[in-house]
Length: 494
Ligand SMILES: Cc1cc2nc3c(=O)[nH]c(=O)nc-3n(C[C@H](O)[C@H](O)[C@H](O)COP(=O)(O)OP(=O)(O)OC[C@H]3O[C@@H](n4cnc5c(N)ncnc54)[C@H](O)[C@@H]3O)c2cc1C
Image (cartoon, rainbow, N blue to C red; front, side):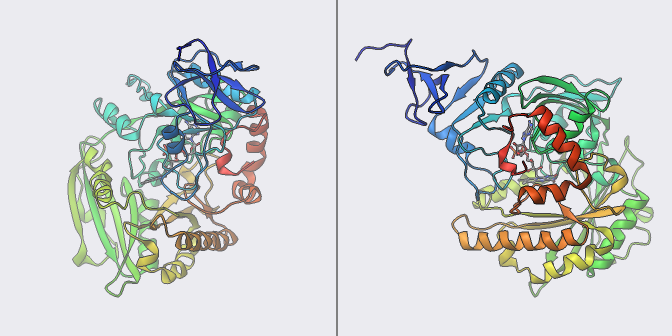
């Protein structure tokens, strides 16, 4: 058989692997490739402009893009772009806009419910856009590629004694991925979410237009992208605010036997701004009931804060005094504290379990009464292997990004039941998804909402309700910047 490298063959989905995609058949809505083995010349192919990176349709790339951390939803794209440049993102989003092909950027694929998946469309893997620019000591900012992971950003900025002010608990998430949802952690009670600490974005709109936006430059786009769930533009670069980093931190764990007291002490701590970081978890007691509450608080040492004074920091708190634990840690080790836990979960084979997560924002005054029945009904088997319950306060005054929704109260609590289930247990997973929905309905009726990083079955009407007063500007931005409605259908918003 002769080799005809210049010819093109239409790939009906997946039949040829490892080939660079060079064309698109609009009638069949399938991609075409030039392959060394080649097939027959076909008519009516639209040529794809030359790319710096690669566009692939091989089996393993498409299968991987139809997976995520949840292992519940599977939507198979028709191609995956690994951009070699921002220009590639512009080229391919423009192309998909022209052909009404749906598109989803994918950072680290840690969304649990198909949010970064796209049936029959294009997934843009942002991991190749991971440059971390020089730290600017004058403006104390750094500009990073959307595919950079927060662990890499932390290491690069710490080399200059600086740090982003807020981190997620897990550092191996992409900057673009967390800025699309909000980015919360124990420092958010002091500095707001990660989205509240962005000074400028470089994005590619759904129409394929490259744009720089900030609070003063195209603010409608800036505010529609931060916590905007990928609906209006692909983030390709973000400029992040930096603050002085501590060298070490003191990490306290305080145990409570009463939910209302635990929440009240957390509230006191964040209103006073006593600690740099406040979170909390709920654990089981000896009888297997979720009735043990662990407050986690961290004080930064020099040069970001004074040497920690235990007496002053713990003054007036109502924890069980016999349970106080504290550890002094290098700052990066504190940020990266989940790394050994996650390595152990991977070794134990439970990292790849299904994750039907519930992430709620509870109004402060009713947080205890809303959470108590959910905790009473929960069993260790429901939470599953490696499951975790997080519970910590956020201050409305620091959460300024319009699309990151909380309750209207001054203090809201993030309440996460992070369940894990064996992937084959579809009945169990369906039961948890129904319970998630019921819990959301109760919380929404009480003035709360959800933090959209979980697995709650949601309709477009639910999203309208969720965004509340922010909806008209968000919907207008969607019409302006993604007129063909191609971006991120996996969120199910528009
Ligand atoms: C183990 C674990 C721990 C976590 N801890 C926290 C935590 O402490 N705090 C917290 O706030 N969240 C936490 N999360 C949730 C996490 O922040 C979100 O799921 C986040 O979106 C995941 O980032 P990613 O890079 O994996 O994004 P992906 O899952 O790849 O994408 C998530 C969504 O964002 C969109 N998106 C991705 N990149 C871009 C981009 N460049 N431009 C526009 N849209 C984009 C995708 O299309 C998709 O809709 C955690 C998740 C896991 C699995």
